[in-house]
Length: 55
Image (cartoon, rainbow, N blue to C red):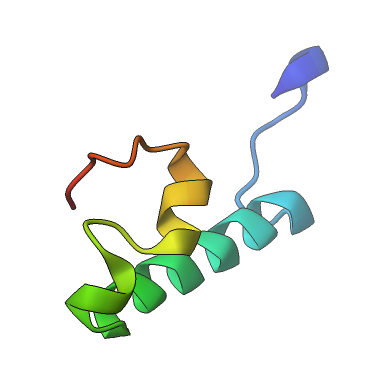
């Protein structure tokens, strides 16, 4: 939306972000609790969460 461009959800960059988010959430829910801790590794990297974050 920079430079007064129209917003479109059909965008390669947004699609890559959606895939990364889906992958992170999937990893979080499929890892055993002891393996993921309070938050899965990919999800932690995705949102820069603190180690104490619980999702």
